[in-house]
Length: 430
Image (tube, rainbow, N blue to C red; front, side):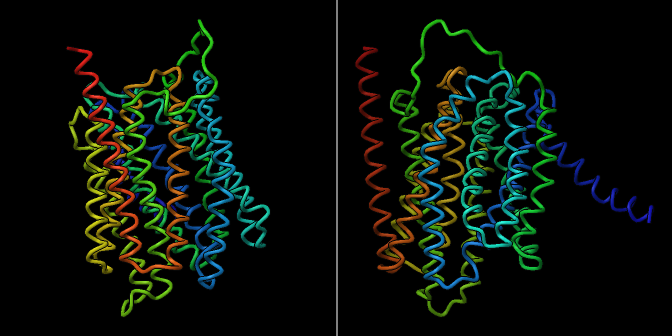
């Protein structure tokens, strides 16, 4: 028995060492970026377990009409309280900068406990417990993401740009989320969604203990306030550059939510004739996953010092792909849009994070990210609701046509705003 465990340890140790070399490359081990990458990978794997478990409990195995009702209820119940609660997360984190490690640990530990409660709720079909717990898990996940994004400049090695560092974190997070989703799907099939949630409990608890071991310099000292600071902060007073990048990312998120639910119910309703629904869903999911990985990989190799142009380019790419699919709608073009949309969402968010990290001071950076995460989550939910409703009335080409028009209008508006801003800057400089 001892020899077996020794062999298992040797098998696990080799890929673990290889992963550690990658996460700690280019000075990331000295600054703490390597540990943050590993912690975020574990966080993403846990979120993937929760997502797959809730999808199994709320969607699959139900009649299509009933599934629509469950999904709509989940989206609305999580969106409305989230819009009220999430904006408070950023200001709280700004005031507790000296304890960021412990805040991140607390979000992970709390999610572990909530997963245990959700497992019982799924097993007994207790929606009264399940939906509030799912909302709490969502808010805590966003709180972790806000804290992680806010501390990124403090762990940044000197020779790695912000976009590249953000992309490295995202790349490992996506890979671990994919592995977690695969494991969760297998466990859910064999043992049920409740056991997937129980499996997430030790992962979150161990990650919470690991978060405390982040380097101490991520805990920035609390600054004395020499003058009163506005209590409420919105994108409108965070500057035009951040506002434009926020608008582009919000449009891409609307498209992402739309694609998920529009294509899901389009397939389940049998509108793609001659295609097995399971094969179609697998193809769409694979395309979206590949697009997300490609976006993170592109960001990790990028040396661009103009993340704002990157954001605009991702929105333009998503718009062109959606327009093309509206004219030539098939399963393969839908998969291509899913791939391009995921690529645009991943790379655009990396560039947006770099813009906020560069443009916004540390004293309000968490507030800025809190506002951004709230608006992006709401944009995704609204896109999901739009896709869910439109799947009842229109076929694929018409649905993609509506989304194409929305993206084109959003892109045109942002181009006009950017041109006006650059013209005003040139006039001022002249």
